[in-house]
Length: 61
Image 1 (cartoon, rainbow, N blue to C red):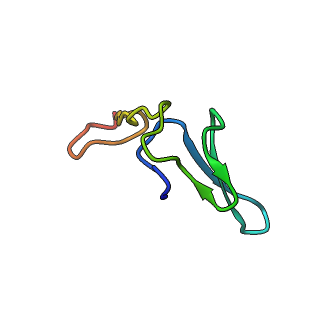
Image 2: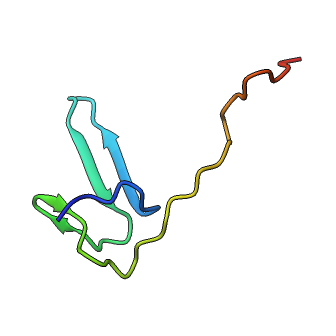
């Protein structure tokens, strides 16, 4: 099993001590070691938006 980082329910963060915490927002994963189940019923493709991105050539004024 592997981690589906392309799923919209996947979340990761780094703690103050530098530890990387991975989790599934709907709890469909195996916790130790973190892994997504094969053919997960909750898998939804992560959408990519341009929120917060600056496009080349955008006028900042």
